[in-house]
Amino acid sequence: MKKRIGSYPRVHIQGGGRAVVSQAGAVLLVETARKAGLDQAITAALTPWRRPRAVHDPGKVLLDVALAVALGGDCLADVGMLRAEAAVFGPVASDPTVSRLIDTLAAAGPKALHAIRAARAEAREHVWDLAKAAAPDATGQVIVDLDGVLVLAHSEKQDATATWKKTFGHHPLMAFVDHGSGGSGEPVAGLLRPGNAGSNTAADHITTARLALAQLPKKYRRGRRTLIRTDSGGGTHDFVAWLAQRGRWLSYSVGMTITEQIHQAVLKVPPAAWTAAVEPEGEIRDGAWVAELDGDVLRGWPEGMRLIVRKERPHPGAQLRFTDADGLRLTAFATNTTNVPVAALELRHRQRARAEDRIRNARATGLRNLPPHKTAQNQIWLEIVQIALDLLAWMPMLALTGETRRWEPRRLRLRLFSAAAQLVTTARRRNLRFARHWPWTDVITGAIELLDALPNPG
Image 1: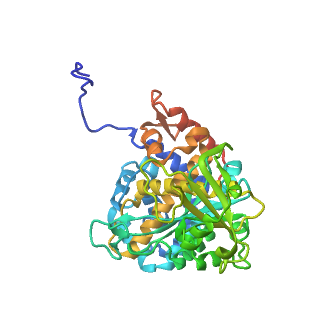
Image 2: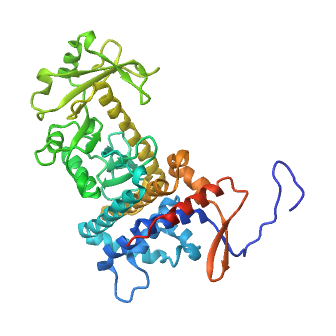
Image 3: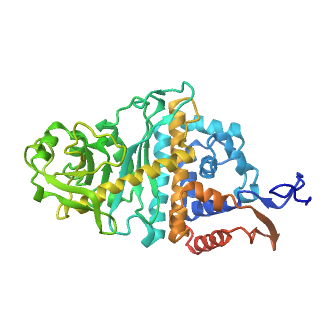
């Protein structure tokens, strides 16, 4: 080390170091994929696309790309960061091999997508069984949030068009399972759409909901134990009727647009009918009230639907709309949940805002842009992004506790995955030794111990 000059010490830089593994914390994701059985499931699912005498397994190639995306990569070539650490990630295919596989799967169309999704669903059910009390269905209910996300395109890619926000790109519709306040969330559906796709297109919401339900364990694919939440984009007659259809019997909580009819009904609600809104801890939400509407505003909607409206003082600087009343912002949603106070239902619907956090994490995990040019290839990329997000959600669920379980992908990368380690081989065993001075070494080693304690998939 040279003499300190300025604020930081100066060190000599040399190449050729050995026995050092960068991104060594990524072993947490590798172990998560192994314990979830995801590697075996994807390998089995993509067997039809493995060429005779092929060196690399298609399932591992796809999973390697997903791992690279989970570590912060945003294109296929970023799999090179795994290729440089063969001691941890094993043999990794070359960039041309990866590109050919994406082209092959894209050419297979729905058949390849179905195979990938079936493997994810199989692994998801196994992970939820392993997680037990930390699983999203621990309370006996699964909450699925649907929301759209704008993905910008900086070149003329297939189906990239002008969006409703006057940008240019695509408008996928995503679905996430909510892990509640104690965790994050995991993607269960991703429908790639052109940039000019409508926000309230019922057919797209139905397709996305079908894909999401297919990712859940069979006991949650119908019945009241599954709650579908959306913003006002899902508040259409066709989508609500599909959710409430006989034999499906799903619970729903969908946002509704404040129409003139609803606005006039709100003006007729007597003051005594308004109930104070509440916060998650049970205290009163200052300046917010909720009430249930009935009568003509429910005409034409499915039987059993409840329409609940909230009025609230707008935040400083917020602009009121024509449909607001008496200087208060109005919002409404519909639900078929009965025997629950309207304040509790409104709180449950307001917590749909966590979907915005999931979208932010998705943008930070490969969904900032869609690298390929053709739509079929980008649909495969969207599945890869979802696999990466699955791993980023399953690892904290299985191996982290307390505050660390709520860490978002960027914090996980900075504190855990980016940690370097020394690779030491003793008694024919490879060991990673993380630096003692790294502030989160105990978190990494503790998580590894929890993963090791889990049973291996059959």
